[in-house]
Amino acid sequence: MNTSHSPASTEARLQRQLEHNKKLREQFERNRISVSQASILLIQYCQTQRDMLIPTVWGDLDIKDDPFEAKAAGCVCSLM
Image (cartoon, rainbow, N blue to C red):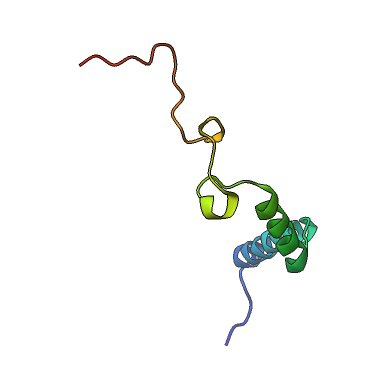
């Protein structure tokens, strides 16, 4: 049984390993935070950002504060 590998297949395996190492290094260098810290940040965001679609939590909404309300431009007259 011949266990020698051709130089081309060895080179290809080396390139795959180098690419894999590069991807692992990029993942390692990413900034990360713990799950508990991310949860705290998410809770803080949800408690401070008004959600117009949940009036039971935030109360009734003034029309001028509603980002989903169509803004009138110019004349708002209708003819029938």
